[in-house]
Length: 425
Ligand code: PMP
Image (cartoon, rainbow, N blue to C red; front, side, top):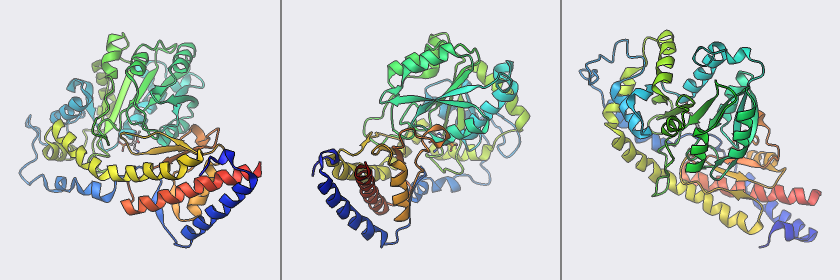
């Protein structure tokens, strides 16, 4: 096999014919597979079924005597805060435990800043065209929040050690309308990138032109390791304190991919003074979160080590799926030099850059043969991938056998789209 770029027109025609044969064979099988969203598989959800039985009719009190059936404790159960604090390596006073979704907490924080300003400052919504920096490729739902609030998004390239910090520093220090940046610092969605210590330190030392600038540090995959050696990142909160920027970071995480995606517990962490400010809003919004669900989580996991042990069971289920994807990509695409991808050591995705100008075509070809992928462009603000080349693969939900079929089809489509493009030019 040779790189596509080295092939003569005749060789490309031959290659195309062979790929089409394989493609049509797939099409005739009438597959119906979905690799579009980063959902846990049913076997992963089963790991937490014990949680449904862990509470009994006489077990509804938290360790401080609080009756979890009743109203109260807007920032969550102390023991649940402690579990999150231990995992995030911060103080329980710096944590608020919320409802089931961290995305809701991010959305709410931005909504609050739009209408009420950061800590009673001038509302973002009355400052003109406010902007967010968006490391790309990134998470489509972050971008959707910005679009919803008409916050202008600016792409910043994401490298293998984090966002392009030269660009971040330059923009943040020069434009007072830049109010935030989205970061997924560990096993990023979709590349699986882990931010280096230097990147985290540079974040902590930012000198924003806006005094109401915030770093949205979405640590959704903080404990979602696939390999034997868990990746470690520096603690942004501590680094920001040391750098004299204690109130700049807002950290988010959740158990959506630890327990049940639809019924987990989410948390937010920040400086004590930010937390006190945010709590004031919480007490207006609700008379307390679902404490019984928090208690279920506490009983089931017991402590941070219980959570870590549970994550090893997830990893055992996910490892073969990621290996199937990475091995097939390597086998089918490497010899053709037709795509590049990161090899994630954690998280939920494999992100592939196919030949420029072909991502949409690859997704369409896959769809027409029965495999749904995340839409091309979804990993970029406004759904616009300037090079039309990034595709996010989400191998966690389908069973292993289906992942194997889907990835083979993906490889065929990637090559076919590249060959088509070369023959066009
Ligand atoms: N952040 C990132 C980076 C994610 O990938 C996801 C889930 N796909 C979420 C947040 C959603 O989190 P939650 O379920 O806690 O709202």
